[in-house]
Every structure is written in structure tokens, then in C-alpha cells.
Image 1 (spheres, rainbow, N blue to C red):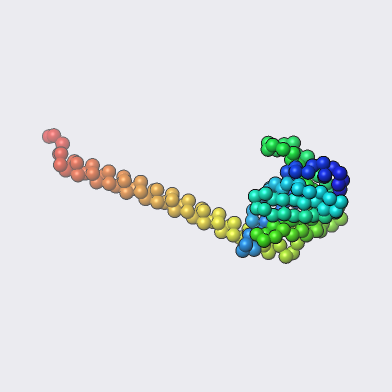
Image 2 (image 1 turned 30 degrees about the vertical axis):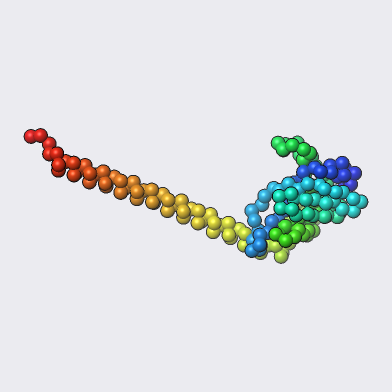
Length: 172
């Protein structure tokens, strides 16, 4: 990692690659979001990143950083970039942790999630699936409720039409 290049981007907003894994208070992984972190400090040995929205602070050894790449596609103001890491950043409500990336095999770009976080990811995916099923159920219920209301209105109109016909028979 070119420390000088990283230091030149002090206060730049970066997105991490791989993206940080967010784990909620129940131990479930949250859907992957591409959060921005700010480069707060660079020393001879560390880089300090802050995730402003949550207040999380991460100090990484420079050996965890593979490289910094600029991001000119972002519409947001200020310097933007990507911090290419050699580690996973794992964020839970209380702390930020780092786990080294273990490639599946030499030269592979496929990443292996640390075993202790695979359960959190599975729990998060299961919860997301249940949430989507519940949303589909609500949508179906709303559809059926709307259909039932339309049927009641049409029956009421038919009934009122019959009542009017009884009161005002056609001229003979």
C-alpha cells in the first residue's frame, strides 16, 4: 500500500471492498449496503476510518489495505474513492472487527466469509425471506379486501336498483 497516496486522501470518503458485513443486535447479518467511511488519519502504521452515520471508528493496519482507487462516478461532493482491503470489516452494534480474507485457492477472487459469521448471514437471509413472505401476504390480503369491498358495493347497488324499481314500476 502506498501510504503517501493514502495520506494525500485524508478526509476523503471511501467505500470498502469487500463491503463491510453489518450484523444487528440479534446476530443477523443485514442486507449488504455500500456505506461510506471517511479517512480520518493516516500514520506510519494505521489508517483510521469513521462511519459518520453510526459513529463506528475502525483503525486498520496499513497491511490490511491493498490499495486506494478514486471514484469519479459518484455524484456526491468531495473526494471519493474505494479502499481495497485484504480483510473483511465486520460491524455489529457495539464494535468493529477485522478478519483476514482467505481465498478459496491461490489466484481466486472468490472470498470465503469467516465461519463464525456464516451463521449470522444465514440468519439474516432467513429473516429477509420471512419478511418478504409477510409482505406478499399483506399485499394479497389487501387485494382480497379491496375485491370484497368492490363486491359489497356492487351488491348494494344492485339492491338499491331493485328497491327503486319496486317503488317506481315502469309505465304500462
